[in-house]
Length: 314
Image 1 (cartoon, rainbow, N blue to C red):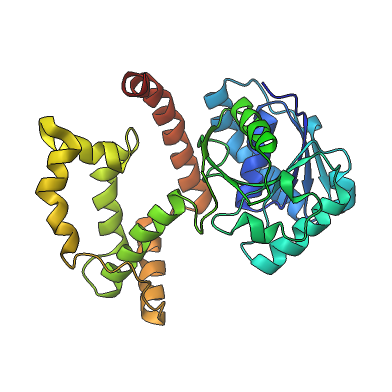
Image 2: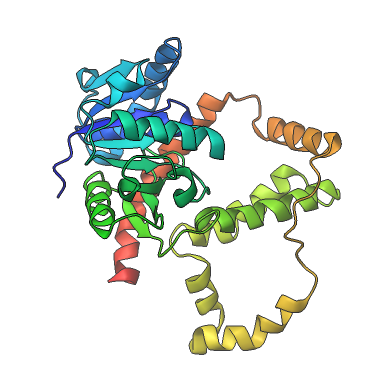
C-alpha cells in the first residue's frame, strides 16, 4: 500500500481532469493547478459528468469536493504535495521549463510524474532539481476508468522511486506496465500510431470512410483486444502449435507491401474527410453525450473482463 495522500495535478485539460477524478475516487486530497481561473467551472462540470461512471466502477458513494482545491499559483499548488502528476502540452521546451519550476517549488523527496505520451524523460527532466525522482506515468483516456499505465524511467531515475510510484499507482486501482528503458512513444502509443497512420493513408486514398475503418476494428480485432492483446491473439491463430505455426504460415506476408507506416501529408482534403467523417459518425450527438455512452460501456466491460482475465492470467 501507499501512504501518499496529497496529490498535485498540473494542468486541467482532458488528461489532467481524468487524473483528478481518479484521485478523488480514491480519497486523495487533490491540488489542481491551472493559470486560468475560468477553467475551474468547466473542470467541475466534467468531474460531475464523469462521476456516476467512476462511482459505479469503484463502488463509491458520493463525490467529496471538499478534497479538491484549485490554484492559479504553481508554488501554492506544490507546497504540500506528496506526489505530482504533470499534464501539460506535449512540447519539449514547455515541459522542460515547467518541470524545472516544479522541481524548484516542490518538496525535494516528492515524486514527479509526467503524463507525457511519448517524450523522453531524461530530456524533459534535464533542468529539474533532483531528476532521480522524475518518471513518466503515461495513462490512457479516460484516465478515471482505464487501468493501464506506462511507467517509464529516465537515465537518472532511481529504483526506489520507481517502486514507490508503482505502489502508489496500484493503490489507485491502476495496472502499471514497467517499461525497461526510455524510448520515444513508449509502448501503446507506438502501436496506436502505426494503426492511425495506416488509417490515414486508407482514407486519404479514398478506399474507406472513418466509419468503415472504425467498424472494421469495433466488430473485429477490437472485440478480441478487450481481453487479450495482439501477440496472444496471433498465438491462437496458429492453432495447436500456436505462435510457431502462425509465424510459419503468415510470416512471409510481412514482406508484402500491405502497410506504409509513414505519415501521409495532412492536406486540407484529408483533414476535411476526417472531420466530416467523424461528424457524420456522431449522428448529431455531442462529445459529452458520446463520452457518457463510452463511459457506461467501459464500466460494464471492465466488470465483465475481470471474470475472464483471471482465467487467462492465473
